[in-house]
Image (cartoon, rainbow, N blue to C red):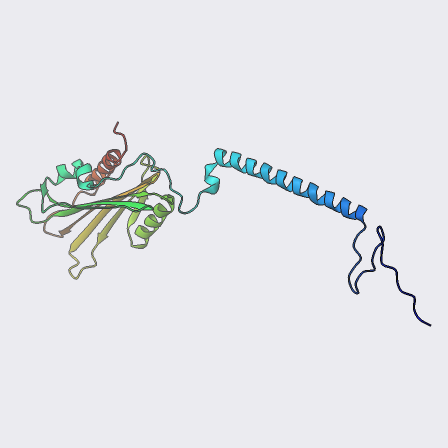
Length: 247
């Protein structure tokens, strides 16, 4: 017996699904599903707009939320000097040691992350005196990262090198003084002295070093407190000189 031919599907009827494929949803289901996709797209767009608006408000209110390691920081009212020796006179040390030996050495380097300024001088109390001292000032403006962690690292470094370190109050955001009496040379009668003052305020770090020497039995030791007061006075003057506006 022969199999009668199958009629072609007409309008409104469904063709049998291909082997292994699920049947397509009826038109009503497809319409419902389409509406859900449309509403999902609408709500997704609305949510994106709302999130963007909230983020914009947050940026205006708290700009630091999007700061990165390379984001510029405010200089805190300080400027970079091309000649630190000219900008900062170091008057207190100049009164203690009025004779300059040689030409003061200075440099200034600029970088988007850090500006570095340096001034080094050799001084004596009188022209007939053989011994001289060195006074070195370094100031840095940190452009992209906070200067506070560097302050902590510097203090730890002085302590690890055997300096006597003490906190200095009422100077910048934080400051410390360091003192070292080094007798490690071959002749232990010689004392090599260093006194330093390190201060951080905002983006500025500033360090002033004094170094000198003396030999036991051939003159007295330099007055440690006199040097300390000169460090304090000249660092304050340096910070004032490097401000954008002079008051």
